[in-house]
Image (tube, rainbow, N blue to C red; front, side):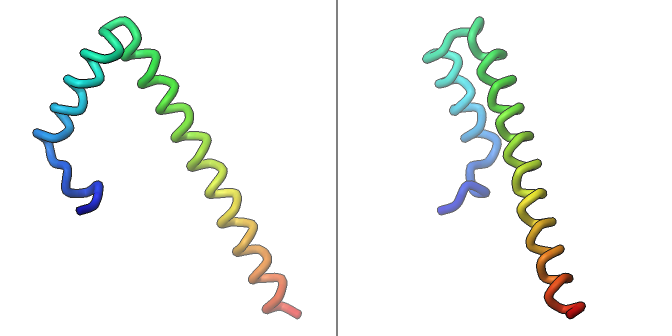
Length: 62
């Protein structure tokens, strides 16, 4: 049972629960913080992958 099996009804349920727990005024702030965190994570993983690729290239060229 992975994250890919949530579906639209599950996402709507999660959104409703988040709306009840955090309230409508905090929800946009939480979404913005989550989005920026996700963007930073993706950039960091791109850096790690590119470092690994460059190391592989260095070892193969010798």
